[in-house]
Structure formats: C-alpha cells, structure tokens
Length: 416
Image 1 (cartoon, rainbow, N blue to C red):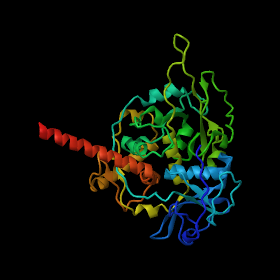
Image 2: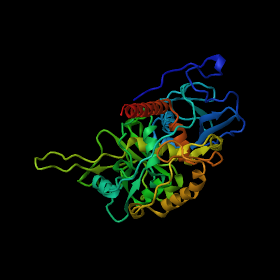
Image 3: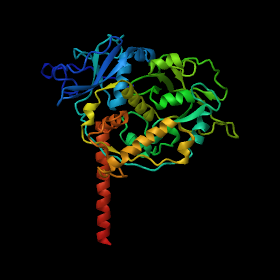
C-alpha cells in the first residue's frame, strides 16, 4: 500500500506547499454553506475564476459503517474520483493522518493533490463490441456472488453501463490511474471483467449507483481496513469460495435501502465465485478473470459523485470533453438489461444530434460535448481521470507513436 508523506505548508502559500495543487481556496469561500451536523464535506476542486468549490457532502454514517479508518476512506474516495493520490487536510489546512479517529461532525476537509495536476480535456479512441458476455459471467460466478441465490432473479450486470459503449470504457482504461492492473486488452463493455452476477435488487441499485463494490487491496485501502464481511444467512455453496487475496465488498450508499430492502440488499457482504473445476489429472483448470479492479474503482467514484456531488456546474462551462457516440443496441443488450438501461440509451441518443454538430474529435468517431451541457457523474470522472499526469504522458506517447508511424509510411511511399 502506498502512503502519503508528511508535508508542511509554507506561510507564503496560505498553507499549501509548492508540492501541492492549488485546489485549496485562496480565501474563504462563502458560497459553500456548512454541511449538516451529521455530514462532512470533502472539497475536491476550487475554480479560482469564480471562487466556487466542487465538493462532496457525505453522510458520516456511510464512512463509519464501511471503513474502520474514516479518513483513509475519504482519501480513497478522493483518489477514486480524481485518479491521483492526495492527502486530507482540515479547515486549518493541517494534514490529517489517515490513522486518526472520528470526524468532527459538520466540518469541511480538503483533498489536496500534487502541483503537477492540471485539468483540461484529452482525446481518446473507441472500439467495437464483442458478444458472449452473459454466458462467460455466469460460467465464472454460477449465481449471485453476494447472496449465492441461484434462481430466475439472478441477473448479469455491467460495471461500466452498456449504454456508455466500448468507446467510453476505452477512455477509462487508457486514462487509468497508476498502481492498478494492466488491462490494456480490455476493449469491450461485454468483456467478462466488466460484469458480475447479482440478485435483481442488487443489480437495479448498482445500476442506479446507490450501491457499489469496493475492491481491496487497492492503492489506498487494505482488506483489514474494511469491516469483516457480513454473514448473509445463506450457507456458501460447496462449489463457491471467497478470493484468498482480495475482497469484493458490496456497500450501500442509500440509507433508506438498508431499512426498506434489508435481507434482499445486504451491506458489507463479500463476493464469492465458483471454485475452479479440475482436469483429468486433478489439477485446477484456468479460470475466467474476476471483475476488473479498475472498473470497480471508476464506478465507486462515479457513484460518490452522483450521491454526494455538489457544484459540478462549475465544471460544465469548460471546453467540451471528447465523448464517444452512444452504442447501437443489439439483441444481447435487450436480454439482460432492465428498462432503466433503455432509458439511459434513449437519453444519450437524444443528445447525439447536438453532439454530432460539434464535429468529430480525435480517432474512432469521438464527438465533443457542448460546453453548455450539464455534466453527469461519468462526464466528471472522464474529465478528471483524463487529465492526471500519467494519463497525459500516455496520450503524448500515443501521439508520438502515431506521428512516427505516419512519417515511416510517408518515407516508404517515396522510396517506392
């Protein structure tokens, strides 16, 4: 696990050292009102041109119920959204240790980044869809990975929604934060790593981003930082097992669901997958890969933005971000997606003509989003992840390789 180093703020930077970003406000911002007593605020970004903060207003119970080290959980939320490791500071601009105890209710904290992080749009590329999604996910999971219920109510869910398409998934993969698995061969929303099997109530709330799957270990959190897994009351089938070196923990962000759907929507329960079958020599056969940690981290950040994000309108006026066109609906999609997914597809189809008028951007038919269109949580995630130092370096490298390829091709045509 990586850990943040101690940084002492200098007086001439109003508590923000030269190694940190200008994310903290230069002066008190009055437009951000204090949070309710049972919430805390986490400031992620400050727009110096307006003085407005982009921040999260998080119920304290969500953090304390889902992590044994609350400030470490805050740091994970910041990392999942911005894609860069930072530190937590309090209202006095003092760094808070991730091992500190409880929050101060009704207070504001700041997620502070290195100084080389700058936010501006970066293009990417799109790709095509592959099939076989449902059968592969079921072959790996067998039944709902959380309740172990094997009946007609078990469904196959996408992590990155099908409505976003392959192009959007590829932007996520290409702009992945450092320290996560190398999945450059993950090209399709119908890849088994972009799915899991779940009871219908879990699937529906996952699609609406009222629940998430927290994968540990990750660059911020260890498995021991998360409360022990909940016993759902259903015995683990003999053909299933929990992963030995990782946890995939279902966590609920909507408190109403805990009371309305208790028993159908368990909290803090870990996923279990089918045991590998044996070959003729009694050795385990190769197994299909588990759900992608990268995609789960992305979805966690998007869910946090959707549930608790405030003032994202200050980002909407920035230059339009490159976004791929919505995918074409196919038979596979209709088989295992609910009506709310169709609504999402229709929403993006309605936007397509306006986006097409902006003209193509980059390769793969990308289209620039209008600057006057309010962003949703996925737009915000793409904006931040696409502008980390690592993502910008990858983009420069791809452009250099593309330029070199063209120059070599031109030289070969001259010689011929």
